[in-house]
Image 1 (cartoon, rainbow, N blue to C red):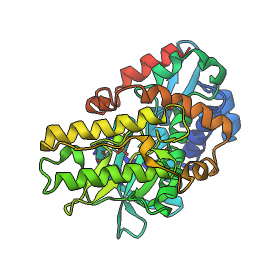
Image 2: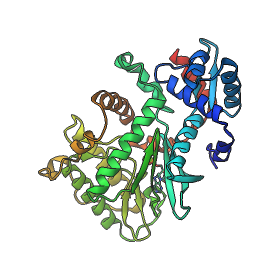
Image 3: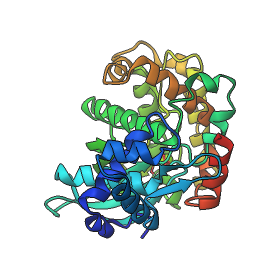
Image 4: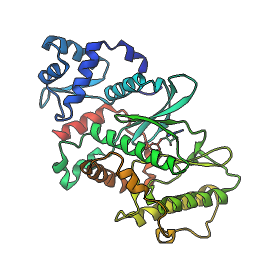
Amino acid sequence: MGRMDVSALRYLSRDEMRTLQAVEQGMKNHELVPVELISSIANLKHGGAFKCLSSLLRSKLIKHDRKHYDGYSLNYLGYDYLAFSTLSKRNIVRAVGRQIGVGKESDVFIALDDSEEREVVVKMHRLGRTSFRKIKEKRDYHQHRKFANWLYLSRLAAQKEFAFMRVLRDAGFPVPEPIDQNRHCVVMSLVDAYPLTQIKHLRNPGKVFAKLMELHIRLAQCGLVHCDFNEFNVMISDGEDITVIDFPQMVSTSHANAAFYFNRDVECLRVFFERRFGFQASSIPSLADCGVRVMDLDKLVAASGFSREETNMFDEAMESYRQKSAHDDMDAGEDRSSGEEEEEEEEEEE
Ligand code: ADP
Ligand code: MG
């Protein structure tokens, strides 16, 4: 199994849990949270907080930096614990099992729902693990500095993904069923299919390609471009039915670069079908061919809970992410959970 050792969750004492929550809360305004603030938020005596902090440190839920400034911050593992503990309190998931997905910006696990009758998927967004550095290099970064940490970006990614999944599902698009969302986690139904990239043979590649293009056009008619519509985010069942996943980077068709993203998505799949299945598309769609709008799903999503500031901040972050080729997905996992990398990034932040 991956990095999520849920079994240790029940060994956190009430004070440890409060201390962990206090670190999280402190990180809203601090990259490193001083111990005085932690003990005051957790409402523990200084010594009590220290004891909890050192046990949280030992379990790698938090880290301690005293090089530049004496303070604590959450690790992904700590954030995972907080989210999972909320989801299990809400009776959404009971146990997290094996890791199924290695995305470049997420860890995806199978979990059992509370009744243990159904396997569900928990996607933990890890925005910032690989692209945070790029975001930070942006000129206008400082304007948003107090918000732009991985914790915040990962939470926004999960909120945005959940909002899109809900709207798309309601509109009848073939996407997983959204179940719940907390912090950087999205819980959704398990799709009984494989990512297209793992599929060596299709009975009818022409038909699947046509269905994909139809779907892409229908999305655009509803006001949306996926922006990462490729062999990694299209799942194909044994019956060769399609399910689309992975929505944090979607944009409205009114986005300035919508036509570019639309074409790039088409081109990715066209090239993939040619190389993998020897299928040559006779015609490919462009955004201009999509005709009139039939729905404004982009506006529906926009109305579903993001503040303007959050949307701008997040879209700016995603923009730098999108500029990388969609095929970056290939080198997913190169620096996953590398403590050194995280350390390095942190030093840059000071
Ligand atoms: P990333 O943004 O990191 O690319 P994805 O949403 O694409 O994350 O998920 C990564 C991988 O996890 C997918 O390629 C797929 O194999 C698997 N996966 C994600 N969601 C589901 C799901 N609902 N059902 C089955 N597998 C899934
Ligand atoms: Mg993906």
